[in-house]
Image (tube, rainbow, N blue to C red; front, top):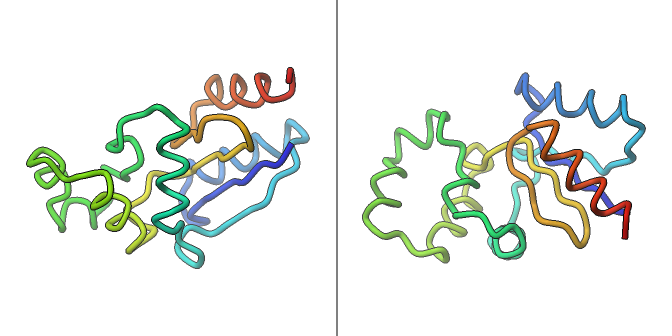
Amino acid sequence: MSVLFIEYPKCSTCRKAKKWLEDNDIAFEDRDIVAQNPTAEELRAWHEASGLPIRRFFNTSGMLYREQGVKQKLDDGMTDEEAYALLASNGMLVKRPLLIVDGAPATPGFKEADWRAVLDQKNAK
């Protein structure tokens, strides 16, 4: 099972999620969302596999989200393609942490129960 953990190292929720992965002996590849921002193609694949609305992939509590008026842009009908391009332009716009497990839905944000369900589902296959 391949696990990609995308984080912003200064984020307290990301640190908590990383500790949870380590405490549960889950091997993962660690990726800094600012140093190596997801591409529009990656975001498209993760979004489509997740079944979640594109809004869930935005860091809605971030300064950049507010400064750029992203909520209004989404409300005004921003297309998914425009959203992927915007998210790919700056890692600080992307909801984090982001858990990517091969063959499972991408999981933005950290909720232990959600992460456990994704990992258990993948282990059961």
